[in-house]
Image (tube, rainbow, N blue to C red; front, side):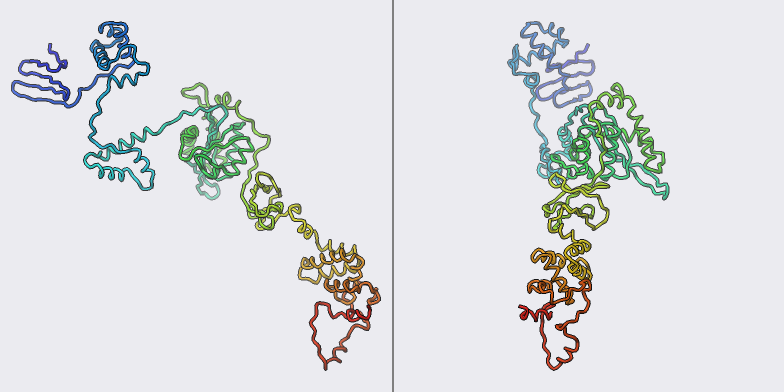
Amino acid sequence: MTDFRLRPESPVTIPEWSVTFVRNEAEFALELTFSWLSCPICTSGEPMPAKRSAMRKIKEVLRLKFEAKLSHEKIAAATGMSKGAVTNVVQRAMGQGLAWPLPAQLDEAGLEALMYRKPAPPERYARPDYAVIHQELKRKGVTLQLLWEEYEKAHGQSAYRYSQFCLHYHEYRGKLARSMRQVHRAGEKVFIDYSGDSVAVIDAKSGEILTAEIFVATLGASKYAYAEATWTQTLPDWIGSTIRMLEFFGAVPILWIPDNLKAAIRKACRYEPEATCTYQDCASHYGAAILPARPYHAKDKASVEMSVLVVQRWILARLRNRQFFSLQELNLAIAQLLTDLNRRPFKKLPGSRLSAFESIDRPAMKPLPPTRYEYAEWSKAKVGIDYHAEGDRHYYSVPHPLVGEHVMVRLTDTTAECFFKGRRVAAHVRSYLKGRHTTLPEHMPSAHRKHMKWTPGRLLNWGQNIGAGTRAVVQWQLENRPHPEQGYRACLGLLNLSKTYGEERLEAACRRALAIGAPHRKRIIAILKAKLDQHPDLFPAADTAAATASRTHDNVRSADYFRDSTTTTETTTTDEGDDDPCLLNLRSIH
């Protein structure tokens, strides 16, 4: 029988041909020599190694050899290894100076490295710095092709070809990714997202084909799913779907984990994301917290990503051949298939999504609040100098000390509220009139409130309380202006005169001004200052209601007076009412 086992040099003679195995430290060669032909077959490098035994067995071999003092044959029988393998292990251990017991700090990895250390093969190729390459690829316009060309130019013949360059980089990148197994506590988290696939809905009236978005949510612990169709992914549809999701669950999970869509997240950030005011207000109403997934990290919401896939396959795929003519019809079909999905038994776990929800998630979730959340839109507005803040192009008053401050305006279907630093400072009935104002008197300064109180009827009543003459002057001021409000200031000026001179003198002065046909404020002030109101003999005590009726007495100049004075003309500029003849008699009176 021919022996083909390898030895350092073992010639074997076979009729008509011979085989010679030659082995040294550098190479392993097989040479076949035939009687008529010499044909060497050479293989460079080390021979193919046999499968190495586990380090646990190797440690057992060392224990039995050095501690139990057993022979190699008995050790082989005890460990199930060959006698040659036992000899090889013992020789390697003795070559490294190992004995039993092994050093305490030497673990299995260290023992393996010590006994089977291989000399590092010479590097034929220059290894690229893949950490730098990984960072460079994050820059705009940088590709692997460009980086390889730069690498080849730098290293020449020792550079990898492009295929190997890419292969080694992808191996490096694969080692960077790590997936953490998430453990979801009962009733804690709900993952929310939109499916990437939409469903066609035909408008029954126009025949136009519209698309509906699919809202998907799933609970972390039980994987209990919810899905519905909406027209858009805007804020009203997002809030409405969230409310209906909670009502479908019949309870509230503590943490809401949405994707970073604009309707839910105002500012997407890995560390400090900011939810939209409306979405945050909704979460506060239900006593929940919002924890958005990190941008570009789909694994943060792996549960809902899987549920989206399940909904696409279990629900949307079954509806692909159906036609829908309304959103309600589509949602009814989704609800029927959703019930089947949640009742479908798990493949590897006992029960179903529904049974897991009833036993795990439902008991740990918070109850729904007594009232449903009322949709509200929030906006930031600066209070103008007229102490009004804009909300949906209508202006609502706030307390006047807040002029110049920024407030948050909350608009519902029926109310408009203004908040300053988290405190509500104003509440109004919502108005849909664009460009108009809604003002509460308590928000106005005291001077503005007083001014607002003066209406024509109130001014006339105030004048009547003083006297008929005062009322007649007020009425003249209101009727002889282009607009009644233009006479408000003159009437308020009369009020101040009553405080200075008293109501009795003011009434007499008004009667005097009416008697001479000049019921102006300046004339009344002149009469009061000259104390003409205290000389009733200068004007008749007739009915003062006839304010503009002509009066005849010695001091009134008629038209004939001016005709007789044509030879002498004197021009005088005076204030309103300064030609009163009563003033000419002032010296004689005093």
